[in-house]
Image (cartoon, rainbow, N blue to C red; front, side, top):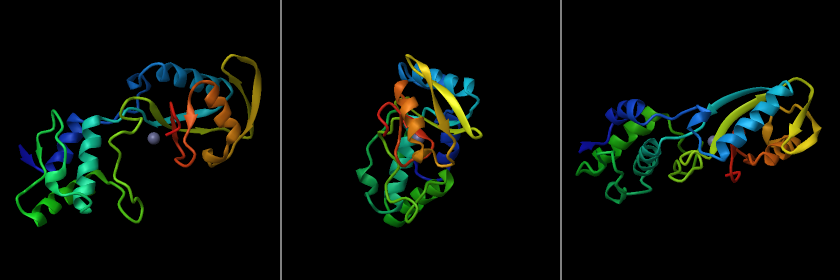
Length: 190
Ligand SMILES: [Zn+2]
């Protein structure tokens, strides 16, 4: 067991990395996203993928360091995670919080007021069923929907959350837009 602290950030950057590789997603979402991106590119859009699969171990470290640092949980409340031999409880409250704080800062986690919720343990990214991507183009393009020969005209909007026509096309492929998280698409929209 190794106590919480910045060493765990170093550990995670080697042993619990996130991926921005589409091949790390699971089917059928993987095939659906691939088909959606292909249609977008054929229509002339640029697609930049920033995140696909999130390491379960990394998500665990994010979640509990955030909660302990912000005193939303006691160190002894943290669940165990196979393959992550971390001791959250330093046997001293201030030291336990300081260890968690090093991790929150090291991982660059958003804290209040920027984020009021702990990083999720159940994100669709963890199960390989979500993707963060930025889709850009100039003016209006015509994109093919799945199983529909008639293409749809879509005009570019800087905020992808507002582009309902784009959301509809994604949905035809089974790739659902999150309503408030700009780059996020998944199996459920969550
Ligand atoms: Zn996301």
